Amino acid sequence: MSAGNGERRWRAAQTFEDLCELTALWIEDQVPFHPYCALEEESDALRPTLAEFNRRGLMTTFSQPGEPGRIGDQQRAVVEGRAKEEVAKALYALGLAADLLALVYEPRVAGGYQVPISTWACHPHTWAGAALGDELLEHFEDACSSAAFADLCSAWQVVMIDPVWGREQYLWERVSEVLRSDHDRRFSSVPYDDGSERGEFIY
Image 1 (cartoon, rainbow, N blue to C red):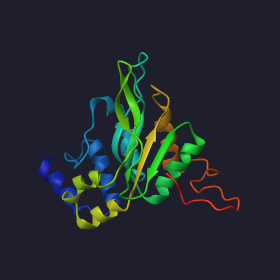
Image 2: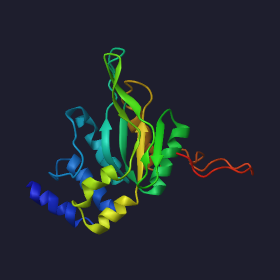
Image 3: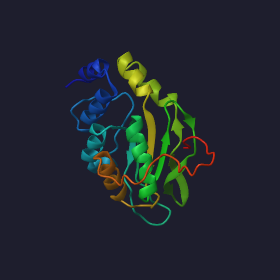
């Protein structure tokens, strides 16, 4: 399949779900074009998991596996993406029920805080966690239909980080449970209300 054919399929997409499916197909090497992502060799083993995440409503835009190593040369497992509000809030609640850092941002928000996700020679080397705002969206504006782009603009940004350096499977298993709707529903993204005045949902 030519890259041109892949680009035509992206331009034909009409919904956020279409974009998720095209990302899954790109991860599986069935579509040769993606407007934003690149998948490094280190993530090859994650391809089936990432494709499933997309098909269950988390359009992935970045990921890396946890890689153990000597102290100072390790990396944390991370996945970033876009999701509709219900899925985003379910993943946010996972941060209350599991040993994961869950950062969730409303549509088109920019800012936040960067968390080191890899170290090299005992120095921070790469980071994740901040809200990208329109920076990511710009890559999709000319690549898909106006309807699909509008749907993407209404999606929330999700960043899931395993705080434990080098842990390999935990993040992928926990996020899979949520996306399969097999999660602990006692936990909610809604702040506890004891009748006193409190702020709105805080990220």
